[in-house]
Length: 324
Image (cartoon, rainbow, N blue to C red):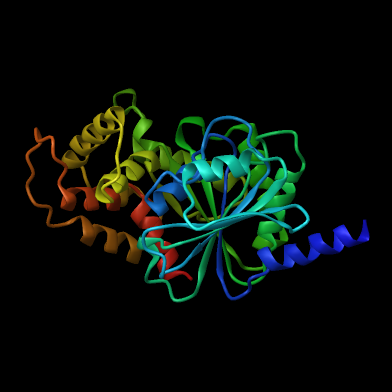
């Protein structure tokens, strides 16, 4: 028994204690879009995401500039023993690892294009949602990530269509009371699914950002950084840019959002609660759009790049690049 405990402790040191990395911990309750956010950063649907209970697995994605076309990965057991290694991880690989009850830790290495200008090595942690099951290890893995040594940034994903749920309030309070934030580490908020708000019913982005700010300040987060985002649509746009296949439904969704983008492409950026320098950089990337045929069945790469800048994902990429 003592040998197993020692093995676990040694492995915990190995996978978690990487002080030279800038550690980005992504947290959320179920259905907010946490895994989809990481997929959007990667530009492909690698991490499995679903509105259902998931295995308590902690995944670390390390940005490796030398890996251009593939993702390498290793899965480990609770005791720190290697379960499986893959030189070319696919979404099916991760689904299999996550479904395996023996797997507790996953390490991935890949090139994250939008983060290539970071000065320090960067690692992103996908933590299990604490309300996804009755398994106490979900909460324990989030706490382990929050207590990582070195500089940390917590990215908390909120669902604009389900704001201020009891699960959210509980988790936000627990994070607020965590020594990790008290030690000077930063937290920013992604207000996801803003594309699902209905302007005609008065659900404007400005109104929901104000509601979100008030909600967070009442929970104890003073002057929160809030990035409005439409993560799923941004992921679809990145897949098109990366010449990856999309479904017919995804194509129609992207076309509809591009039409709205042409009518008010500065809207999300201007409404965001982020440092002015970041807002100005995004605004500069949004300027100078070339005219496109709105009826065309062919997506324009310049417009898609600007749409990603508008979607909130580019704002997060700039934030991570400037604050590491």
